[in-house]
Image 1 (tube, rainbow, N blue to C red):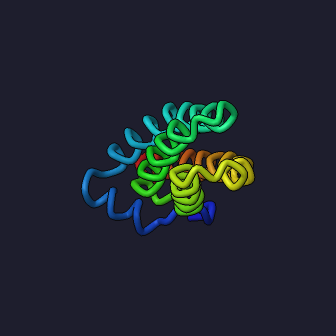
Image 2 (image 1 turned 90 degrees about the vertical axis):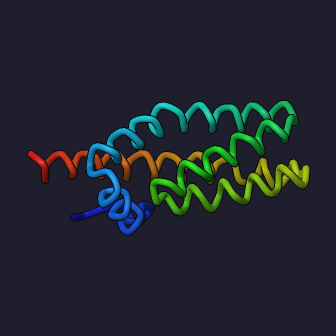
Amino acid sequence: MDRIACIDDRVLDRLRRQGGAELIRELVTVFLEDAPKRLESGREGARARDLDRTRRAAHSLKASAATLGAGALCSVSARIERLAGDCDTGAVDALLGQWESSLRDARQGLERVVLDDRRVAG
């Protein structure tokens, strides 16, 4: 299948073995609803210089991204989490655009995964 490179098929294959395509659909649905809220919370925290809020949002996105094999989003979230924990406002601000684009790529990749799984099942 033609997948977007930001999603690790090995992680998804492991999830399929554990709970099938239905588990992936459920996890992706929750991710698609929750992730934009987490990102916005992190951005708001950065704007307000509440880096603990940004750190918590990044931690949450890092965990969700790792669960679904969204490596680039996981990586940038981990960097933001660390930098926010270090109170490095400038470095956090510099990564916000990359964070947003990584989330957009992950969303597109995961939407494609669910669509492809439906085609295979159908």
